[in-house]
Each structure stands twice: as C-alpha cells, then as structure tokens.
Image (cartoon, helix red, strand yellow):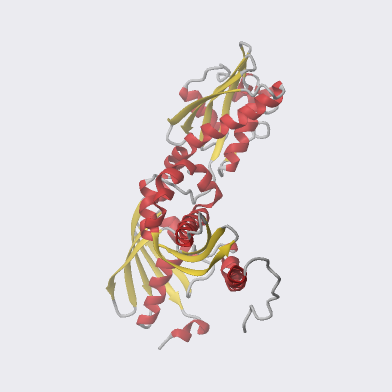
Length: 414
C-alpha cells in the first residue's frame, strides 16, 4: 500500500522549476514521515537507541551559487543530525549537564562520527536550498569521543541533593539549620537551586518536609560548618550529595554565589565554584535579585553537576568482565539469537566474545558497564528477550542461565 497515494497538491507560487522542486521536497518529506512513524513510536516506548537519524539542512543561496548552497545545507543537516542523536542518546538531563563539553568537545567533530549519509530529497526554497538526509552514526567513534570529553550519562537512580546554603544581606546572615524547629520556608537561593538541579535530573531534598529530630541539630547550628558536620547532615537527610555554601547580596546591586559539593558516601568534598553578577537596574529590587540568583545558580550548577555525576556514578560506569554461560541451546541459530540480544538489546555492554562450546551450553566473555547485579536485572527483566531465561547460579564474575524455549520461539529453528 502506498501511504502517500492521494496526497493533495496545493498551488505554490514561484517559477516552474522552483515550484516543482518544492512540491517534490514536500511530497518526499510527508511520505518519509508516514514511513518513519513506527520508528518514532519505538523511540517513545524506550526501545534501544537507533544509530540512524533523519535531518533537514538549510543553506543560503548567495549570488545564485546553488552548489555552494547545497554543500552548506548538507553540512547543516549532518550537524543537526548528530545533535539529534546526542539528544536521544543522552536525554535532556544529560545534554543540560554536559552542555559545554558537548559544544566544545563533541559537536565540532560531528562529521567524524558519521559512518555514511544519503540525500533523500532536495530543492530550492526561495533564497535557501534545503536537503533531507538519512545519516548513520558510527557508535564506536561517538562512544570514544564521549569518553574523551568526560561525558557521563547516569543510568542509575537520580542523585538526592541536600542544600545547606546561607544568605548574607546588609551584613546579616540567615540560614535554616540555625533554628530548624521553626521550619522556615525555602529561601530565594534555595528555590533557584531546586529549579536548576531538578532540570538536571537531581532530586532536591525538601528539608521542610523531611527534617530529622531537632535533637540531632544540637551541635550543628553554626553559620560556618565543618566538613564532618556537613556530611553528618547529609546522612541525617539520606542525601547522596550536599551542596554547601552561601549567596551574598551587596547593596542589592551584585549577587555572589559560592558553592561546594560533598560526596556523602565517600565523605569528602568533590568540587566547588563561585560566580558573581550585577543585578539589572531596570528591574525591581526583588525581581532583579530573583532573576540574578537563577542565572547564577544555573551557571554554578553547570560547573558542578558533570563532576558530581561522574564521581557519584563511577561504580555504575566501571567496566566489569563477566563470564556468561547459557544452557539448553539446541542449535547454532539459538546461540546467534542470544549473542545478538546481548550485543544489540542490553544497554551497557561493550563487547561479547564467545569463549567455549559444550554439548548443550555456550559461554561468552562480556564487557559490561555497571556490575553483575545490574547486568542480571537488565537480562532477566528485559521486556522483549528472544526467549525466556532462568538464573541457575551466579558467583563472582560467573553467571549461568538456562534458556526456556516456548513453541512460538522455535520458529527460527532450522
């Protein structure tokens, strides 16, 4: 069935050649969108990432130079395609947290990560030339670039952050841990930090709802806390990271925000940053300070969050070598099904190498980022495995599984 049959043509002004090109481009684009709908639905359902991307590029036409305009349009489409892939690959939180590293370390070399591309449609549109391309990303190359840029995409549970941030204004300091039983409302600085850290995928701890027993704070009421006190408060609130520091307002003309991040589990400071900015004079005092605080919080968070994520998720991205044995295999086709499943459908696997074959079992050496427990969760709880699996035993780096072949799954047997 031709899904594009019956497409209603509309009158388009312009010279005959230009009109024909525009009609062809629009017609091809609509056809592609119909055919691409299943792909989009798969992405929305969280299917494994695709290395194939569609992108539209635009190039300006100067002095009638169509060749140069087409070249510019192709270049634009390739860069946009890589950007789209990175958005899907890293997610919005990953892109926000690593924006500078992406812009400086990955996107400038966008063309290096493209394995190949094909122009599907093209045409002159007014004073611009447009192309529709399908490009394929070389996953090995882009993985290498992401690692070189220090880009980390946390796959585990979100990081819980506690904010211990005081405010200094007109020489007076205020901070919530001075008198926690009063349960003061969140300060403007806290609200700004909540917003920007939530946008980056963190879970800010609302200390107005989860305050531990007041007795716990007896020795923790000084405006300047020692590192051990900061970490103790982090443990009391079950935080993963504590953001400690202060915002200072100088005569409502300038705001300075200084923050340090502490890893509660490891018990040490991991990074810090300080930023200052003048309050816009054309805004009201309160509104100007609020806007300035949000901008400062965004800039400081942009410096801190990549390091926080990299350190707190280090265990989840470390490569582990596992020996995976599957029993109950009946023919080479089933072995291939399982190997392809590991390589293509299980997130975090770097490589799969077959190591030995026995009468009814096959063993593989698997390089995996995340450890044995996470590997088993992803294998056993996968929503669409090639066949059912039962865990037989696991110890150290050895995992033994049994394949259960349902009648419907035996259709691929020779």
